[in-house]
View: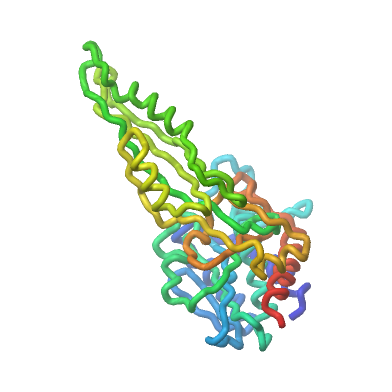
Length: 355
């Protein structure tokens, strides 16, 4: 199918998606816009909640499957916006609007790529396109909930803004609630067991703790205390001080391993909130990665989470746009980034699925 036509249609779809409010859990109307795309190109599709997905025309159950996935939900616009976040204006080569960069540009570029290859026979891999919901809040009706009804997935491209470089690994996340205990008392009386003072040495421990294994792609596990809370009255020494610790896990540890280590070694009580957001990776010599490397794409490790965390297969994060623009005021993506994204997606996927 003509690449120029698909690119123009994809940019038009992105403008349509930007104009529709689609906060996580409220993506009904953007799902309809995605359905309309598939209908316009005579592509058979299915919808589960607000997840819309399609298989290539000549699907063969005996072949492995390549997943193409990105999301159509957005965060809420922050108060620093100077533009209407739902007005998809193009100025100086930039398409402005909420979700333009994260991850609308990647989504429509992957949809154009899937559409380009949809009607081809004799592909070495099946193609499965999933436009997923509730990615931003890891919600109960997100890709994770959809996976049980999808065919087995062997490898995946997850569309997120990476400047079309190859994110071959992504850090996982574990959030811990910590309790530092002490002895409650009246502030006027002596007390050598003040939970707030006890927190000083605990904070110092977290500040200096290092995990042993350092990943080539993702570096060290990153541990950060992000919240602290204690006390309710000026004249009462609190019985405990509460902390929140954000831990970004590299691909050399499972989230459970990190939780076991910290709960055994930390000088306070710890309880993890969830262990489901594990790190993701793909082998550097995987043919899908090498298809991108031959086109001059570089590999790196990503510190940010995506729907990769829901997948158990090898996966790569790749897409047009720049991650530093995500969730920022007056979000935008360059039109030429979308054009390049579609071209590179088609070449990378084509180099992998065409004999």
